[in-house]
Image (cartoon, rainbow, N blue to C red):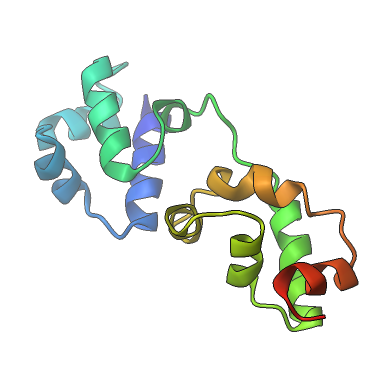
Length: 136
């Protein structure tokens, strides 16, 4: 379960949350997390994983690694195209139908939130991106 602890630790760092704060915020003892980190426990009860995932703003599947991260190439391609065309990436996210909460989650590291919406526009040309962002 060391990988589970590493995932929890990663998402805590992304959200600037200390493990101790996660424990107090979820009601899970620090000893449980220590046992998880040192591989003394092989799994956590479902209720605890749900509380951790909810506190971190991710799904349980993401926490257990059942859902892999989206291809970052899509994001890199769109960011480069936005830079070339002078388009704000946040505006592109908005024009693609992303809500404020989705954009905020994206900037906190949850790429899946906006992946489907962005992958639909990943094949667009720079001119198309300018039109979408309102810079025509």
